[in-house]
Image 1 (cartoon, one colour):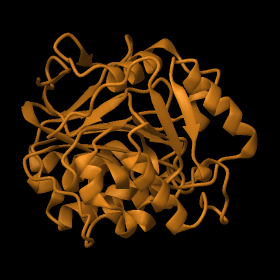
Image 2 (spheres, helix red, strand yellow):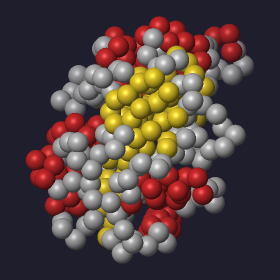
Image 3 (cartoon, helix red, strand yellow):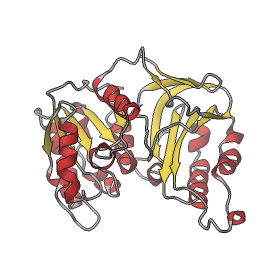
Image 4 (cartoon, helix red, strand yellow):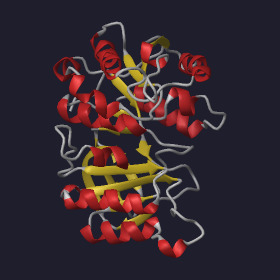
Length: 310
């Protein structure tokens, strides 16, 4: 697994959307938020285009991803936002060219589709991080979130850095034990959507990270069950479960008609007897951790220490 050249101040970032359209009032603030980190910014056409809920046509979004990887003047690529649409451009990407030009690639949520493809087809590490037009411009962006983002995109050395929750926010052990494997995954909806396609996630011997937003408990149950039936949960070496933002009961007035997420995890994941940590501070939340997808990690549920192996 290749580790892209870490970014440094003065490097040029290509800002793109492979998914949803960016609200016009967010664009300049998003650009400025990246510039404040010491980077130069080239904002792609997809940051300004709209095709319904998409940031331009599939052809434009795929063309821009390809261009950003092939352009030697672009040092890293940040997805400006998520939304929907990354899966639609996968058949249009030049994976051979992208593999030959690995760069820091950052984003999350719908961007999970690209993380899976680049990790598996292009064999390089990508970064599950907050994004410029969503989190970066929020007043709630905190030092913890900034620190994890900066470390992921600018530093290949993890010897003195752990993946740890903010102080006072402990993780929860679902299944005790210790596990080691390549860190993969992201948004549960996108991980599930990869099944049955040429871009299907490979979980064999790996640590699967999952999170989601705005999916009621029944839908989370359905998607985890689909992964279970596909053998993806059994194949994994362990699990990290992140934030489940607004993933409550469909009808809050009738909680007896739903199953709490901890119950769902206990019924689907716990019987696999794979080391599992819940409440990892990562996903559609602030503060949020950034993750180096594709790196090998090891974690112990007793100490709740997650290390990236050099």
